[in-house]
Image (cartoon, rainbow, N blue to C red):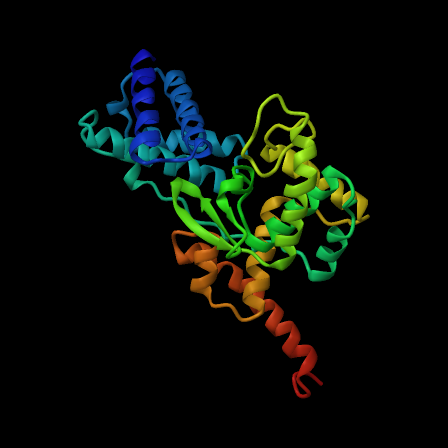
Length: 302
């Protein structure tokens, strides 16, 4: 297994340095690799070049026996395809046995989103005289105004915000950079929080921070902390829907498309590399268009 450990380390460095993958992506790859190595160990296979299509079929059977969903299996196979591509490129194996493996893709789930009436409830629950209330208001206004990923919001710095032109500098997945505009509601909420509540939270910290969003002790707010804040806001609003940061991202995209924004613009705003990632939102807007048509056109139904 020692040679597995060596090549695993080399693959991690390749992902981090050459592919510039995010820490989350790297860990997903390494978890998939670790479970595959454990399988090889159980099968008494000590050399990566001994893996062939028949062994992969056995591995797939094991995954399905564990009741893994099609999406999880697809991700593992994709990880291992990339791993063997890396091995092949560095002459550690003669060929890539995973290129012959294909997993039928399941239908992508249509993303959930919030209606404006639901959002309004969340905008009204925070105490704007309290530092944490100001922070929470700035947080939800920012997430809805920009559609940022939770990691992008968590990493937002004061120096990234330009209030003179109403834009944020965002470093997204794979260190891809983009400028994100934001509107008046987010501007007011951010300025109130930064000039008042954030200063009071910063007084509790042992050192100065450039992070926009701080926790109650004045330290940087974590992704988990952001999710907890949204959950508490939902409880205060007495809502039954589940709200998470990515749902606000879905809401941002859906509302833009519903109001006539073109797909390419929304792709740029979301920081999607491929248009296909953005196209899933058209399913939501098509359903809404059909609903409006069926309920509004005089001859749509009897």
